[in-house]
Image (cartoon, rainbow, N blue to C red):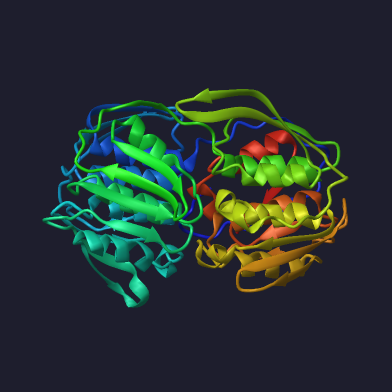
Length: 450
């Protein structure tokens, strides 16, 4: 599947039980950070299990543009020969980050305190997304940004020639904003401090420490205080990327709603700042178990087994859990459609400014397929129809959003009639093997080419 070019309409229909092992791709968040921090280290960083979706490939291309040597060896194995903190060269062309909000925001942070200028763009979806939430704190370091109205791409960022350290309180829970500020702080003198009132995924802090940066994290009355000492010499690392829990969510959730299913998803990262979905599913009554719990590369990892769970009930999802599962609400809403009772999801304003307005996209598509959905600015409620109770039969708009496309295809696997998406192409940005992986498990997916 291609995330660019002609739309790829696709339909999912009910199948027999989903069975087998789902080898999902490497973690997207860790893959982005491996490439960026490898480029900022001195020497050769070796990466295995890298997600080779379009989002990450665009980040690899960007690191080459900034002067790092990034080599693909096949099978998810890559090496990065870094240029060191503050060593970025000025790119000779526009940096195209495709569909990746994570990629563009982290890369902006990494270059914002070097005396270089870069222009960033992306696809139609990314060009609609707000960048001011990143460029505003980067301006505190001395960087200057000029973009379209609302701080949107295309945008030119002029890095600070004489950066200063900052103390920044993140206004909304966002791992991207936090990470951009920390990456900018690498080439600023003294200590850069980031304060977040709600904890978000902490891959950046963990990986910075692994590369040799001096990072401390303290929980205080003010919030979670992260302090980074600037201008370290980052040491190259050998990184084994765990499999992506956000991608694992799709075969896991499919198994929970397709009668008779039993699916094992091995080697999934269970970082507590990312595992909110699995906790929520278990509270709903899902037959979801962790096997072979262990730690790899500083990250908790386990094998997940998911079985058909006809007894699931709707719940009130705690608002404070949102940051640990923000990307998983679309697929959770699909599971909630097959549960008994209402599932209420508050504190999810961030979903309005993802690759699409995910609350609106899911609400419109679920309603078209016979599910009752209520929504507000920062909440939504799905009224479950019970096992096998979703009529289906409609076409949903993916809106250039990979997670929306996959969520509706999973809906179709358990609905009474097939569910179609107008374009499955964006799935390639994060989960390029989604179609063959789900087909091997027994799903019925049909392309509507031509």
